[in-house]
Image 1 (tube, helix red, strand yellow):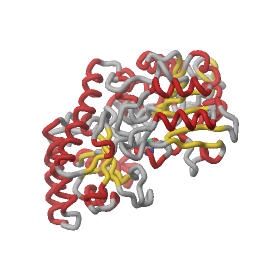
Image 2: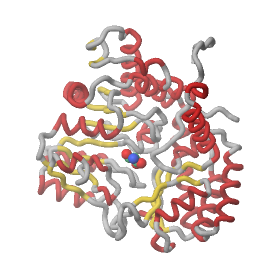
Image 3: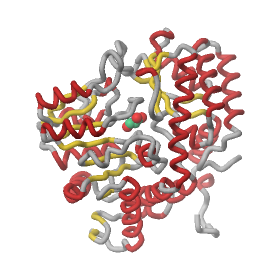
Length: 422
Ligand code: DSN
């Protein structure tokens, strides 16, 4: 922070309980291998902006059209953030106010569909997101939702099924994008289907936005009417959301975010999104995105060699989905044993999973966070070896404790961004 002469007590003095939990979380994030594909480490610069005085401001409206005075700095921050994001993605327009990915997606519904109209998205069990019309989400309750699936034989998106369902149901909005799909998404194919049935094509790139910026996943921007994303996954920003769209949709998207869905934007988050966009515009970010994918491919190959069955047989992006059926262990049991060993992933359904979402057959992992620490192929090989040992010894606490020690020791060579080295 810029202040050098604080006259106030520190967090530790005011609230030792929370300060201790922050310190413990820092230790945890430093000493563990974090493989949850939707998580990352924000840089110190992003954290500083996110923890800045912009948290104090109310700014309903948009830059230069606010309902509050005192916006001299906030307006510049939001203009910078929106301009940087639009330039980065080559989009006509960017809105950086959505509180996160789900509100960003809701704004798309509000902009383009009326209650009970038909929408289409990848079904949750096939790797889609709740907000792409799944039945327990408001998007599946307030709209007539038709889910498409991956193919049974290879677990790839079934573009023939998408086309056939779209012709049959004529959705207002066609969603593409996923939370548990390890392969490239063919945005051109979705565009042609949307055109055929007159649908708005919405691409949710929350998981892959950093890969898109880095040029290692094709961009949906030339194809989709509207593109949504969170800002904290591969993009490495603060927890937030953003929407990019074509010029003709800018007004309706802005109106849908505010006043349609939200009140005052979280200006501290906007400032941090601007910083993240600045970081993502550096040449080093391209190398980072490439390394995420390289690491995922090495990890996938090493796991396959050890008899793990990967959904689709591997990965093209940052994410790996393991079907543990052949290992005779439920995803949850494995995820919990891994967590005790200092390797953090999440249990997940696999396509056509016979088990329930709260006790599924799969494990989902990804490489954005470990790549942010500078880990590479040798570390991916070690991680696969540790995972192999844990899967064979889930109840052997001595082995798990030994691995946790080895993991923490290995992590020390790769200081986590955003965390002061202790
Ligand atoms: N919850 C995010 C994920 O983990 O993929 C998606 O919103």
